[in-house]
Amino acid sequence: MCGIVGIYYFDPARKAEQRDLKAMADRITHRGPNDEGFFTHNHVGLGMRRLSIIDLSGGRQPIFTEDRSKVIVFNGEVYNFVDHRPRLEQKGHRFSTKSDTEVALHLYQEQGLDSFQHMNGMFGLAIWDHSEQALVLARDHLGVKPLYYYRDEEKLVFASEIKAILALPSIKAELDLEGLAAFLKYGFTPAPYTLFKRIRKIPPAHYLRVKGGEVQLKSYWTLSYAGKHTGAEEEIETQLYDLLKSAVRYQLVSDVPLGAFLSGGIDSSGIVHLMKELGTPTINTYSIGFGKGYEFYNELEAAGRFAKDYGTNHHEILVVPDVAELFPKLIASLDEPLADSSFLVTYLVSKLARETVTVILSGVGGDELFGGYRRYLNVQMNRYLGILPLWFRRHVLKKVVNTLPVDRNNTLLNYFRLAKAYLNTADLAIQQQYGVYTSVFQDDFRRQLALKNQEVPDFYEQYFAECDSPDLLDKLMYFDLKTSLPEQLLMLTDKMAMAVSLEGRVPYLDYRLVEFAAKIPAAMKLKGFKLRHIQKKIFEGKFPDYVFQQKKKGFGAPVGVWVRNELKGMAYDLLSESHLRRQGVFDPAAVQKALQDHFQMKADYTDHLLALLGFQIWHQEYL
Image 1 (spheres, one colour):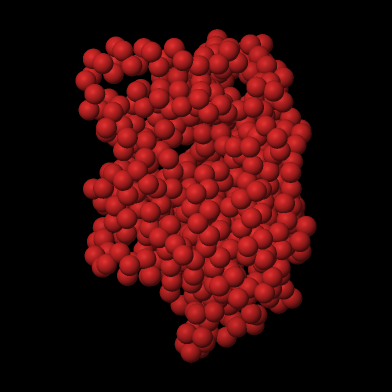
Image 2 (tube, helix red, strand yellow; image 1 turned 90 degrees about the vertical axis):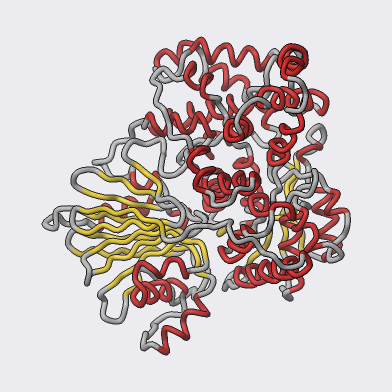
């Protein structure tokens, strides 16, 4: 695990300076506290910070081919490097280290741009190909690792984190209105957008090639849902289990101590079960809880019970965080705000884990593969609601439900909140329905809110059409795999773990497993009104039944309570009419109405206020 940086000047007479690379790398020391390395050649420069995981003494970067015609800096891991290395050696490649990074470079030397699709891992990499006079950047299949780039008339600059790009004095942080519109709609910025003008994300499964003045961005892998498995369900279950076991086996390779997050749910419990089955001598597990009054978010009892049954070396923490102090610090670590409270919890549990391990396995990705989100069920339930007469839904039910108070932290009031969502989406097209469930600000609200409106591409239409399956569930999961998984969940997992120099690994996102899961018939994932059917089946009889009965919690936080209490003062300060008028981004009247409606429980604007607060803190930090 590392952080990488680099500069490419379009004018070959310009010189890339090591001091600039050093300034960039110094901004991301947390990603690699063990070592640093730099390469410059005329108009090209590469740099890195290293967190040593594999080949601790010999894997220093940058790494060159034998003839020094190619050089690489690499962030992440190639898990199947042990498979590629002997084949490359048979073809005459010679290695000077035992690292996966050197294997990745030689694989590129052998296969060129086709090599990335064969790298089973997580990565953001940069290769200077001297023989081709080309710079190549690439991001892994699912977007586990981030990679950003800035481009203007004279240069292209890249880094693992935006703050490193902004270390160059010639690059000024400016608000990107398209990025802002995307953030308000989705609660994160889908690739290729960011909130910074001229700074873009390389999308998952893409490479960017720069040669002379030409910049090409191309996809190297596409996920297909077509051609469903036709064998018996038991046969599919066996293959799925074996693939997941193989993914965990790959990701247990490490020369430093490792462990696993444990929530007590099926995703993390499944990983711990397989770690034990694979003979891991000592399994370190980590959980977090919030104490009395926050039982819905407290996973300690379930996780502790599972850890005891499996004999893990379990670590847990009960926290009462200073949210008002922590929130701004973590927004700075993220580089961009998120309307997702789990980044706070991920940071706290990562900090706990880093006390004893350097690598952590996470259950992120299971929901998107096996149909674990309630919203998948919500869209299906809307179909049944549509059976009721239109006049009754609109003029009776809707009017009654819209008068009810809502609060996601209260069981009864949360049902009222869901009822509103059902009734307000029943008449919409499927893409629009899913937009209501996954967007933060709906389009009308967003247009009222932003003083400088900018339309953003409709990713719902794009990815629903792009998915090569007619099945509704496949389209929903494909949308999530392309948007919220890489740029929300994986982004926060990477940034929060790396903030404490912890490497996060995600076995469910082994691309072989993702490809196999995409071809499992949707009816085996969502059976009736039961989510994750096939995932539960593969662990049936393997670990205790109480895991299946555990309600989904994940690494959420009581952000609704925090917004009404600990963050209330910050909300009234940063979202005050005077502050908003000075800033000139949001309509003060629209924001004030949302604040009042939320605190009077006329509406639940928890995610909206989290997004707005995050943006305000980000704006103060960067602009």
